[in-house]
Length: 352
Image (cartoon, rainbow, N blue to C red; front, side, top):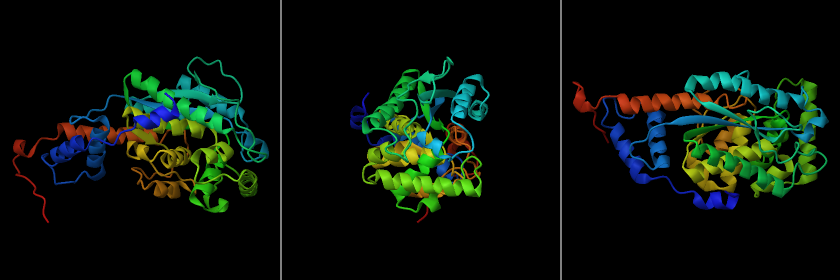
């Protein structure tokens, strides 16, 4: 499915299914609305599934792995080889995302969308658009066509998992240097100073942070990304991992699947996706608020409140899979709470 085809397939949520689910919550033996956003989540899932009796089925995390040419500017503590190593570890249950995803029974699918070298690890999906982006301090990170191709990789991954019976998804990423690209996008899209949206990432010193900030400033000045054109921003100062996650969000909306956003980098991808395709917004669920400086700013720009505040900033999808668990709790209550008629304490009525 192309990007254009995916956009054309997105439908509004099913209001009838949502109304039915909302009303059913109010027949269950508890104070009205006392489960708050858990009730809202189940109701929204019903609208997405277009089903008055929604259930969660198989869950999967799509981890987009890619390298960033800007790493050569000294903006990271580690080298690009770490991207490949961690991505391959995901196939051996040695990565944090695999350990955490097992709690909710979710499967992890690492995708090589732009690792700087080839991987012969059989568990890594080979969808490489290019061998890492170009150095955005010297010019655009990628061409517009490469950005669209990477978005379509995300769409195709959702298509593939839908065919395999997955009904709930989450995004994750792995890519050394991707807090640099994400901060650049954030500064442009939110019209904020680079200093305000940039953090130390994975362990930079204060001096290194100054270098990172200057590199981002230079990259924006050289490339002049247009904040009114999400793909232009993505291509000029973004990353292939971010593009892939954008595609996951758009593909999930096109195929009627709810999808959890992870942390800062995933949220930046969500912001670009919503700017490009506003109709995908109600299909996106914010799992947690990243501890990166702009974590809260991005969620506010999306008009979304996180379900979890845990000061996390690991990435990989580790916050998003915790969203799966919250969904499990919500559906457990929805389907197993007795009705007022089955209890002995009467009913609650909605008051003015």
